Image 1 (tube, rainbow over the protein chains, first blue to last red):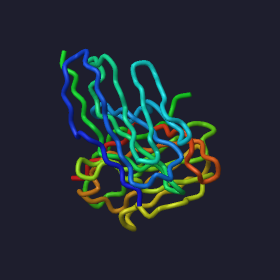
Image 2 (spheres, rainbow over the protein chains, first blue to last red):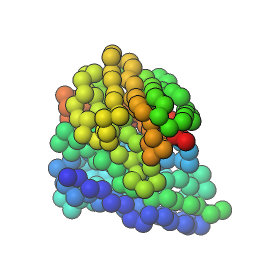
Image 3 (cartoon, each protein chain N blue to C red):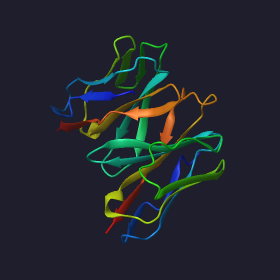
Length: 111
Length: 117
């Protein structure tokens, strides 16, 4: 059974810092890995999707990497801003099982 | 496209009442998912459909929960009778899948916040 872990559970950084969020998964037989953002009281917004054949994917200040064999992904946020404050979730599908989510990392960027 | 549309956004009901949550997936998507989010357990898959057919409902907590997808543009999640422990945020999501292989991006609705008193 796939299990997804995200570390740290919460992170507080000053504005302008570069930061890394971590995601690990137990079953490496995945098709892709997806990073989401969730603002308080809101739905999930898809940030990046990395296919299993890719090593990384970039969107603006966000860069996600995938090391499938070791069961790890990182989300790198460059030059963080207060507007980046949210919970970040990673999720993987494997086999016939749709997205299995981690518990998320709650990020606070302090102005 | 308007994205995945869920209704209602908020629902407050009394214990024992029937609750129906609604979802309209993104046009052209052939897979639909219902998730539940709580502080304690995070996001849990309840059920998912592929081409309107339920594929896996092992996440449905009890027989009080049921879901239908009568056509490609509409799905419901029903709880009857509702209990206070059902209080949570319920999300619907959709994606394009190749058969049953979940190899494409999933998009989520804004969720329905259910409170059972």
